[in-house]
Image (cartoon, rainbow, N blue to C red):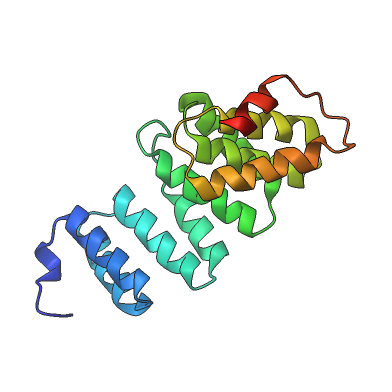
Length: 178
């Protein structure tokens, strides 16, 4: 390890440092740092999530999924744990499981546009066009969509509304103007 004493680091500091290692693609250091923390506090949710992200960054989706499934916190307390799990399910093409998790997330956190978008993507991949359209529309009604995600969602709404038999409300005209 570099000059820091990894055994005594607070888990939030350890997670932040591991995130830096992940960003610089030093996955071995990230995993060592997180694992040292998990040896001190097994199943610590933040560290588990960072370790899963490190695994996912290396394409080890199934390992990351297994790790997250083996350490399930309460959804309302650790929604990012489940958001990561849903995103990994999407990467693995397991859209039904991703949709279930995103549906739970938006039930408890209805103002999160990212999770409405994730639900829309999963439903669309499962060929549930009307539900996907509705999820995308809910996503557009939230305040937290960054411009690139908003553009993606508008594109999906436009595509789904072309001859797919989705029921559109007058809200789409208002949303595309704003």
